[in-house]
Image 1 (cartoon, rainbow, N blue to C red):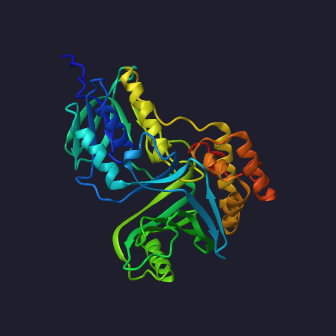
Image 2 (image 1 turned 120 degrees about the vertical axis):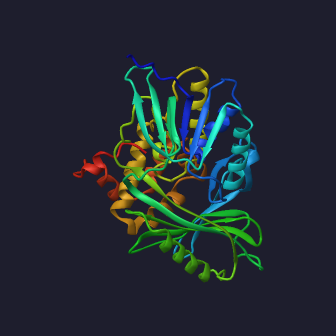
Image 3 (image 1 turned 45 degrees about the vertical axis):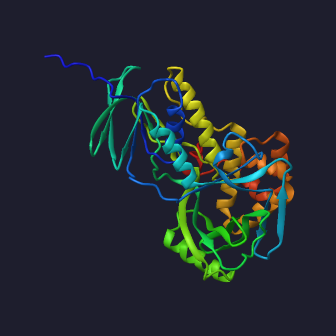
Length: 393
């Protein structure tokens, strides 16, 4: 007896409802495409556990999500000498995780074409055929879903040139905090020790409230417990040991992933942090995810397959690779390199570099600002296979 061909339960299954998954689902919820979308997410509820920041003009298409913004930002070393930056017409803007989650889920819940499977774990992906119209069976611990396309945004462990590990707390104090309300501490008190390079990241949210993060750049991920203990020490040095903790956040961001993404079945696309969303040299990813979600939604609305994150342009990829390899090769000089960038590259050019909009003149200023010999060494072919494979971010 000949078996009947499989029939799709959904046009698209999105695995993972974090920033990338929710961003795409929320866009599709407002589109007239008629696509049937299933979102599979292990969580049953969301905590206020994330912060996303970026530079934009004061008013833009995401303004309703921005809860705070600042005109200035600074870099400083262990000696306390600070370099203050600002760019006319640009502000450093903060999106609170709880606000993002609430808006995205509200839009998704308003669409009858999108089903959310909360508390469900995807366990496998099985291609059903080899042709261009082949379907994919998504296996979960609550059954299976037959899909035309799958977008996998789930986090995965991947080797990286460096890891940005951080632990943060939002605090409330009875007394005014020792932070300038007009600017963000982007990389404060940069220094190194046996555990790698570390610095403090500070977002002043009011005279008595702030988000303070302790961050490390290192060749291997740093345990959250270690970071939390170091953050407590830093808060004590600032005289804030008694401040009330409102919420906590933390994470590990791979900077410059080594090697290509693992192979996947036809009809499956990787997205999110493990699919190329993070900027290798900085860890910024929110705006990159929003640009991807827009492009992917538009492709699907045209009746075309979903798209992944675009490949990094050669110049940007090369500059990020050289910079990360130089920092990794001599972490003790990491603060020196970042301070050199802050000192030698005009603020507008540095923001363009961090925001994927650098011009040739910005790259020229960046190169001129950094020590010559350590970076020239990274131009030579590496003997390690890991470095040869550093081709994606």
